[in-house]
Structures are given as structure tokens and as C-alpha cells.
Image (cartoon, rainbow, N blue to C red):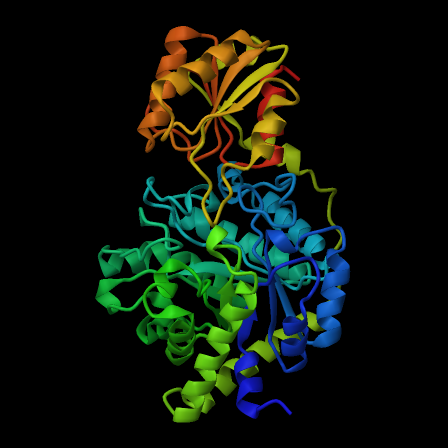
Length: 495
């Protein structure tokens, strides 16, 4: 018989796992009150609804979440690229009906796969253009804009029958570090945090959002611990009137794993006021991951919580409170009507087309339609949060034409010249696919070199819109997605 404290610890844990079927350890944990699971790319297959049914058979009240935002961040369409607009695209269009419809469409897709929690939308106000982890995942750099689109997305998701989870409290938008790899410190004046970065969270709370995800960031004015582990920061959420589930960002991220560890992070997060502990994606260690990394990470968190409960360092009442909030959410989503309200037919491609922006030689770009495109994919290397080097974006843009991947940060002059010469020699208009024009000097240098050799070349930027002019026309897409690449391709081909 499973120990009572083990079942209690399970009730607040939310692990990821390997494979497209539930492993034996996971099924056993679900039967022993595990709160549920989070899906990542490695879990996605045509049999996803069957996997969800398998999980729910082991625990009928399981919360099944997915790290899905649309645009640059997709798991449901990990093999092909997202066909939903991303947050930055929706912010540029600034049509709340379109944003709410996008949330409703995401809810429909999630429910069809047996998913009842969507880890989105991003409520961060992206005020630092250098931000390596948020960027186009945010609706924009203006708090009012972000707030209204966060509310529209939450309403679309939750009216569509899934729980929304706005992230990353108290705001990950003003940092130039990625908390997957480091511990960002936000040195803003607390008044600016209150007035700018907390505003979208206040709006989401007023709109009745079901859950909020914490950030692994330090705000020195509020203490030395990262927000996820800081009772002063999480206490502010309750002071703001939030009564739902506080979910941690992944405990396997470097900001926690390499400081206090997954186990220490789990105990400290619960003590700080978190309710549901997202353990993370076991593929994140890459080649260093063990074959049983998923179970190891889960056990690290579970055993640390059980030990802290036994020795009294973690009050049982605090964990029971967290468990009860998680169960209330599970009851709510289980009783939600599956069908979303009637609405007009949804056209994601049209929304994305409305968000395209062309700068510099606008007329030349629009009028000089190419017969084919010759693509140099010069984007940054992939990150843990966003697979920005995913080939589907370049593939969709090239549409069967010439395509080459160039890691401009590491490429030699000879490799860069060879890629550019090959693209110029190939059939079609040369397209430079980039994502960091204002930050990555190597990307700008490539554009300048291409302009000197082929003045008819064009830039397709899937990152934040360029603030500084480039010597070639720019198609600003604002998301690394399949639907965005297809919209840019159709524009350049005159379709």
C-alpha cells in the first residue's frame, strides 16, 4: 500500500515523460494520485487522444497540460510548424476578436487531443529587445496592449473548455538572459514592475484566469530568491486577488536545477505558495539525459517533498491546500462543456497576412514577384523554449526550392561565402531568413554582404521587427511558424 505522504506529494506534481505511450512508472504514479502530466514534443503522435485516454483511465481527474502557444512555440504541430498566429502577430493586428478566436481554436484542438490545460498565453511585456526567451512570444512592449490580448486569449481558451495558464509571473519581459540556462535578475524600479509588468496579470486575474505560472527570475527589491521559490513574490499573487492554481515554471531549468536542485526547488516552491509543480521536459539535458531521466526527475521531486513532510520542514497543511486547489481545477475542467460557442469560421492564415509588414523597398518587394525563392536560413541556434532552428520554417518558405542552413555565429568566412554564392546561383530570388536583426551582428553582416552582391535579395525576419534599417527590403513575419512562412512566401511570389 502506498504511503499516505507519497500520495500527498504526488497530488501536486506534474511531470513530463518520454514517449507516445504512458510508461509503467507514470501509470503507477497516476493511480497513486499524481496530479497529471505535461505534454512536450516527444509525446505527440497521431495517437495523442489515445494517450490522453490512457492517462485519464489511470487517474480520472488528471490535469493534462501542454506547452502550446501558437506561433513560434508549438508542441501539437511540432513536426510541421504551427498553423496558429503567435502572440506578436496578434498584437500587431490588434483585433481582440481575432485573438479570442485564436484562443478558442487552440482550445478546440487541445480538447480534441484530450488536453485540459494550455500553458499560455504569455503575459510578459517584452520591454527588452535583447530578450532571448520571450521576444515574439509576447503580444508586445506596451502593457495595455498585452493586457487586453491576454484577456482575450484567456476568454477564448476558457470559454472553449480548457484552463488557461498565463505566464511568467511577475514578468519575464525585461531580461536579456534565458532562465533555461541562467538566473535572470530584474533590476527595474519596483514601481515600474508594478505599473508595467504586473498589469497583464492583474487583467488576467480580473478575467478569471484559472492558473498562473511563475518565473525563475530574481527581483532584488523583493528578495534574493527567484520568484518561483519566493513567498514574498507568490504572496503578491494572492494579495492581487488570485484564488486559482499557482503553477511553477519547469523545475528542471538551470535557474533551479543548478542552484537548489529539482528536489530542493520542489520543497521551496511549495513552501513559498506554489500549488502545482511542473517538473519539466526530460529531453532538455539533450545527449546527457539518461534513459530514465523522466522517472529520475519525478522521483527527485517526490522524495524531497515526502522527506520534508516527514521531518516537518514542509507543513502538511500547505501541501493539502495546494492539493485541494489542484483538485478544484480538475473538477472544473472535467465539468466544462466540450463544445465551444458558435462563432464565425476561423482563418488563421488571414490573421497572419494582416500582420505582415514590409519595410524599406516596399514597392519593389510587392511588385517584383519572384518565380521561386532561394533561402539561406541564418537564424540563431535552437533554444530549449523555442526550436527556432526548426527546418519547417525554411522548408515552407523555400517550397521545394534551394535551401541551406547557415549558422552565422559559427560559420567561417568561406562557409558564409559558399552559402551565399550557392543561393545566388540557384533559381529564384535570394531570401535571408533571420530572427535577431537588432541583436545578432553576424545576421546583419550577412544581410549587408548579400546586399552588396545581390541587390534584389530580400530579408524575411521571424523575430522582433527590426528597429534599425537594413540595406534590403524586409518582410516582418513576427513568428517562426509554418503559417507565417507560407504567408511571406505567397507575398514574395506575388500570390
